[in-house]
Length: 147
Length: 442
Image (cartoon, rainbow over all chains, first blue to last red; front, side):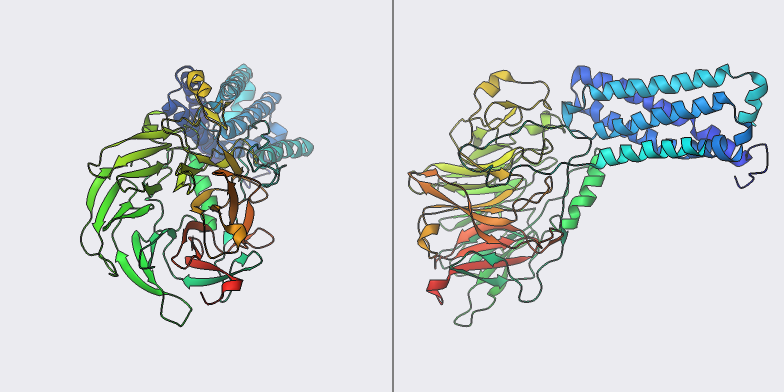
């Protein structure tokens, strides 16, 4: 990513991004499911599982989010589209909500309910919208993203 | 666009700060102690407030501070996490050296981080799993003789002598050892009298107290969680005082709902059972006060469903309004998060008269509160078998004035045959002896 002058994006960064970026979404969806199950059953295993899921989701999000940040705002700034910028902001908001949610999940027992569910729903919805925004991008412009 | 990035970074930073913010306590421990403590509303946190001083230990010649009219000397050092004490009829002092068996699995990310922060204080140092005998050396003052008395124990805490048998409460069972007066080592292997709740061991200490006639042993068993975050199933026979029949080893729940009863004593004038109890954390610096209470047979004291009588704890699901209705309000608040770990009821002793007829309580000190609370030994006066007034500090100076360094932390309390107060210090790895200035040389 030291190729600021180049119009295309680092192959390595794009590959790593492609590998890691889908992982957090899966973890956050699973967190939401476990949050709902815990709220309905009060079986502590689901609360603890949700706690690990959101923590792991956040850890896996660090590298792809940094790559995205650099690509959208620095290295490929003059080529990045408004779809990509919107995708960036939606992801950022989702991650902020997930960070809050990870702290909420450190509370003991039933104190996580219902805040955990609302934050999990918010995170999943934001990421879903981000995926739709990316899909809406005209094909000619999309090339830049996945090159 | 750089402004946008900056704004994003600021948003992230503010999240981190919010997550890490913590409120200071608004009550002093004195305001919250006594028979009718003021309780604020519970708070919800993103991260619980934590303030943990770093272990420094005692320097040469440094001692805790004692109240006017008292003096303090170190009678043992270099111990491995000394916790409880027992004075034998010949005035030998037994020191139980132990710490958590470390069997609580890490099941949440929070445990990883909280464990790291809390271990700074030296409170989680490894225990000796042994009992050391201290014997006063003739004439020459200074430290007492040290003998390895019993070894290879499993996180022992409570210890009692009934007749010619010593009963040790390991974290998972009560073990009986034969004792011959004057001996400095027991090599016989112990015989198990009764098993005790030993899974997970979030709270691992098992306090022990024999009845006056020697037929029963009372065992303080702490809960397996702060507030049921390990599920309700693992709380079977936990947060309770068990009564064990010394002849048969059979046991029953004597009283329940006592989150972590770490010290048991008989009140000398009424003969009633009293306990110190460590209450729940993480709902505020001024909640919930730890307490001293008489323990009624069959009594329920609230944990986990309610605290200090009928104050509901919303963290527990399912709730049990039927049980909450029966919850007994404790007799006397010691203050929030002070962590009482040692209790000594004393009718008479060799300290000045204002320390007669009451309870000495050692406060191991807070982690879930800012500023710090506890880290001292206090005296609570009793009248007609009931505590009165506010706790008077007896021994202080366990941490530095800036609250950053921890020299020691008091645990077990006993009175020796000369009427002096003896204190185990598990961070300073020492045993201290407090006497009256007026009776020097006693």
